Image (cartoon, rainbow, N blue to C red; front, side, top):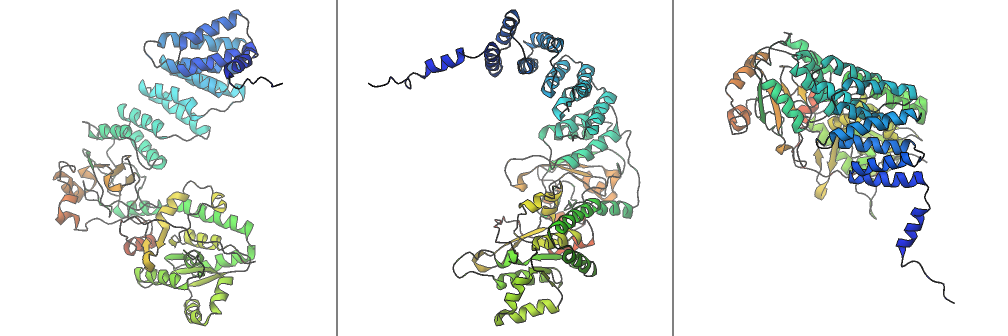
Length: 566
């Protein structure tokens, strides 16, 4: 006899499951439905019924109600109801001795901020410690934004200090709010401080943040109260070099009214508004040393210490290289076919190209001794490899080593270019965990391809798309844009005539750079070469001078790279 099937009637099965839920689970299920549909009145009705029925309430119930109330509090029509029940729900939660968590406090802080009580919102955050709960950045936002909107600067700065004490990092919305607060309360030095924090925190800014900057620097009286200091040019240049280029951090430089324009930046880094060239920004001295020590430390853990230490000592005595070549990566590039092997011709092409571009200075080739032995055994290649060895620009890594550590350490320590298609996404690079790793790669990595057997190098960009402060006292701020076409990106150019005499003369002759009146639109200005790219040090200057590239996009293809002897 056939057994009746219930597959065709899932509704009955679902109803039975729902009916078997306990009251607490049913209440939470229905609350979540109200939360998804943003139906506050229905949620309140459920809450009142749960109290009447003496349903046992838990943290999840209260957090769902608090979240819904905090979300609805932004709606003018329902704001009063949301605030009334939000605080009532929270008081009930505390009365039942149910400890709030971070989500609970964030919701109640949002409710407090919605009624303009930043003090209560901040007080709630301070009480999190009583429950051994750590706040998140979102927990601080209601109090911070509330104080910023009410122009209560000291209170807002106190919230920021607490954020820093907790080891949290401000993001663009918080920095922009504090910058606007400092501007509107006449704190010129605060504007400078938060502009620097914005530079460190984001590569480019949103339209909203750009408007904050534009409004402040464009308005009447913006120059009052923070006229810049006067420094020797060499002193400012030294600060820029020490910081890796793109900023000096000495405070406002120059005096007078600010000129704010919107425009484009040419592929060579020249601003179409003021004619100044943007720099290619590197990591600073402290970050470079920390990075090199991190690489060396990890290498020592994984390599034979004596071998790597010997390499470090050798590098100290041979530190004049301007480029490092990942020999295995280039030699094995696109060799995964039947007759493929190690292409010494590809490697030689890269070496000679770098030699020619550097003013006849050989790059340092890093290659595993197993590979070098095989090349020396081949009569066709022996003479070339011996030439590399005799000229002192081939370093062979020892038996059992991973050559990745060697070429990475050399490139970081010597602050020079690194020719490799390795994207450095492997676990050994993830171990570095440095926030400046991507910045370093952008500034130092040279990629390559061989379309139709012809070498094509993709050099680092001639300038960095980041907020930049020049030695002349001007600022250039990139605005977020759609797509990857840098030519379409709009920049804020912020200068003032008093910052630099020749820049002042240029600026006074430009009304706008968006309708054809900027330096980039005048051939005699765009070719004068009056401005220099600021290097991060002399070695980086050389790499900028001879490693200029065409801006045609070249695909990055990673070749085989691992070289470890058996």
